[in-house]
Length: 383
Image (cartoon, rainbow, N blue to C red):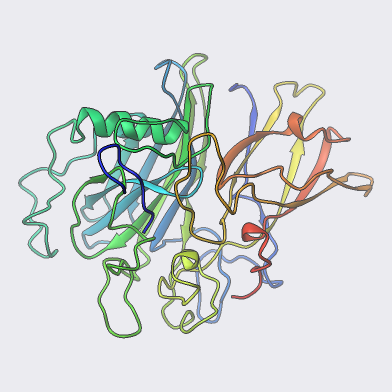
């Protein structure tokens, strides 16, 4: 687990948004199918999943009429489902965790701004949760705001890269524009774990108290059960605009991912021993862009990256290893001219929105090929 030092003890819209995780996939030459099927070891695409990745969120803390993020978590099967939502900083460090209950084919819509204000989605008290362990002591029933004032203040500080009231270190990069940033994962689980803020314990990064089942038979919280789907909407209330995308489904496959040296989605937390059994995201992505001419509003890339290793909190104003993350990006125009992008730190964080203009591309219309190997470790292709 990450160790944080407490203060009392040690311890524009009108832009074309290009989702960095909705790109054409180059993955061992396989063709993405509509659903996972037997023998497909590198499936990334539409379908139900054991984990959802909402790759980026942004919330304007200073201006409620500024940018915000809405997301929906959906149960795609006829049985009820319990899921654990984990909010992560742009350094890939968890800051908040809580459970949600979904009835048959149910949907939960969440305003990320509400989460930062300590208002969490609550299940009605009449729902029968007897089939899920620990829900009698830690049910997803809440009287909002669930979080204390200090917890809410700390949560916002964590996603602005600032010092908060509870800790003397930071878990994310500073954002002077007052726009909180991060990403969110949602895992199918089989028991309630309650609400945790600040340094949440029951999250995928915790291998001391297994979140995933271990080879020695220790039980975990998360399940291998592909049943979730979702979507995300980025809104700008100031000009009444919005852009939407699907959540990234992370398929789980117990038969495929077993043993050491397996590159999996959460593998960086357990020395790549495949205990999470989740299909990893590829490192190489292609995306067409149009940035200029009649489309003068510009274009953005939204890019989530696997840091390749566990990240620890750091002194505010500094950046911990393995950041800044490196990349290798090539631009191709319609005539086939190929140009390597100068530098190798265009997408330095675990999640970010990057303006195409900031990349100083020589073409207004073409496509990008980005090698986003986790932390520059060359882990791509090990799955």
